[in-house]
Image (cartoon, rainbow, N blue to C red; front, side):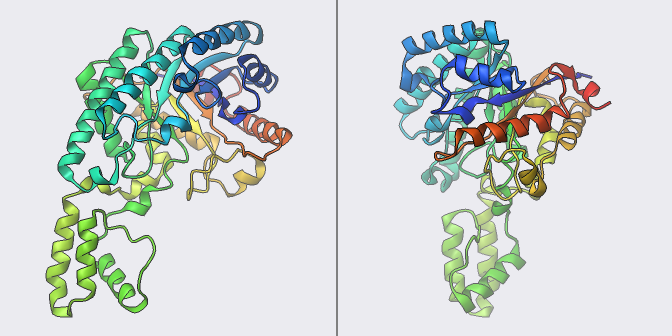
Length: 393
């Protein structure tokens, strides 16, 4: 059984627009007792915005600063810029090609140059695609093919564990446990090159909004609509199911049974729009897929939103993410038998603090909440590179 080495890491997006040169954020992290960093594209490290001449200079700065601070760029990660677009799933093939060839591949080149891994999220399916199962299948297959090409490209560059981040809504796959497994297997089947996930401890906050409704739930909502009008957050999946529901509101009780059957049949045509109850459980994700997640983004959360809160005493008081349960869940993932068709389980995991800072937040407050978060996690990862089993002794 693989016994992975664990490293505590910080995503430098927390320093965005404040400490922006490699020497600045490396020195700051070194003073906080952190020696592995995830370099975010949001912190002046994006080839689309900066260009490759700058990126080459950035890579040299990283190498120089790393030598005298002892801080290593473990991974490079995409940021909000490309996250905000349809990206690799854009309706225009020229845009898909541009994102793949002029953004991801150059970013992989830079990652290879500094000896880092790479992770990203830069795709989304528009509502037009979601409303048509045939369009959805076509878009999904195209995305898998592109991810397979990226996996092969990274393998050629010597990057061992490229991966994509899991999300929590139907238009941003993978967002369910089963869907994540399908993506990993399909990309590996197409490329024969390892490709993985990044799990985020706050990205289980949306799935339970998208559970498949059964007949009793639809009946209950029907009653509410008839008495009170529009109700928030009723999820029925496709627009066609909503249209049938609107018709059902105005039918007689005798017609309801037939209409209900129509709605349920319509819902069943769109399985990709629904999650299971377990998809909203962070620890279930870690138990099933943690061994295929070389990067785990750590944020504190109440389970109702992905706010990227720090691990301060105040946030921990109402939070659900804690050190030992995270490590125990990862242990379960490694104890499980290897799944057929999957790439090898990861030999290293970078538990990466991904904490956001506000535009008007004071520098001293940012550093304090980050230091508190580091101190909290150092209770469970006192030294980088220890095996999971050693940490759980």
